[in-house]
Amino acid sequence: MAFKAGPRNLITDVEGLRVGNNGDARLKSGVTAVVCDMPAVAGVQVLGGAPGTRETDLLAPHNLVEGVDAVVLSGGSAFGLDAASGAQAALREMGRGFAVAGHRVPIVPAAILFDLANGGDKDWGRFPPYRELGYTATETAQADFALGSHGAGTGAMTAGLKGGLGSASCILENGVTVGALVAVNAVGSVTVGDTAHFWAAPFEIGAEFGGLGLPSPLPEDARKVTTKFTAPSPGTNTTIGVIATDAKLTKAAAKRLAIAAHDGIARAIWPAHTPLDGDLVFALATGHRDVEPDPVSIVELHAAAAAVMSRAVARGVFLAEAAADDPVPVWSQRRG
Image (cartoon, rainbow, N blue to C red; front, side, top):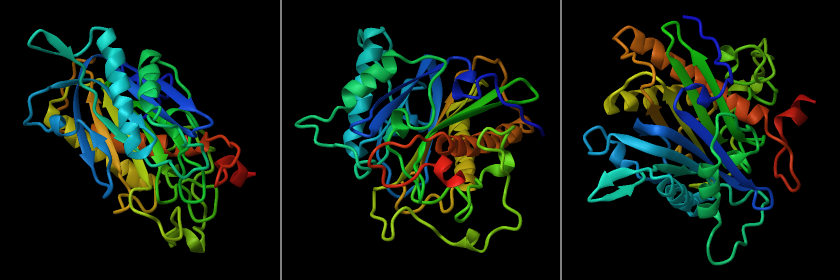
């Protein structure tokens, strides 16, 4: 089972998806919107103990709405949930949305991460800026977009290193494409001990995040549980992401894909899914490739979901950029 990266090595290699970023350097926060050209079948799985979400209940397989128009990842903690309102406004102007009683209601599930304590100026006055950030991110969505300290990854942090926005893709032997997008703000560490080697190294394609592989032998501190803070606080950490495919999936199968993608988070971050993280993965299936996975190929699809999510996590941290008043260094500074 060999995977090759898509032409962009981004989630937008999945046909039918575009991504928009909008961030504020002074705020040290931002928004990323994944816009579906046509409503996509969606699912979600939350494994962190401190999530912040909007419109996730409707993604349950037994609930009415089959497709979503976009999903939004945002900084700002609970204030960032306003970003989905901005995305909804932009989509409404485009004539998008679920048709009901002569009206169209854009369906925009969202998740947030905590980046309030990252050195940015959060004195925004009466209303937080995330609605406008979400509007612009949605309005400007395209196939190519920046990774690292952009969008929802603008002010993200991990244990000892700045986090960021990551993405990756792969193409399976049956032609199906799988892509991941993730904003990495975990309580845990993405590197092995105090080294510059990524836990995700076994899944790396080429040198997409440095090409260092795993250290040999593993350092003594590899098993040490290193966290972002000496005494982490509830609600201050989260890895939120999207796994997507152009295969045809049901809502139940999309949920299973989201579950599988969480394995990639667990392989890339140590520790992951803690009570202090809000770890969440949305799944999107655009159906552009007329392939319904059989019981054999579904295993390959799930393995690819884990691998591509793991790579996306590492790429987000690998590409982070330093900014004034950052509480932690970027990966390139550790690498030297």
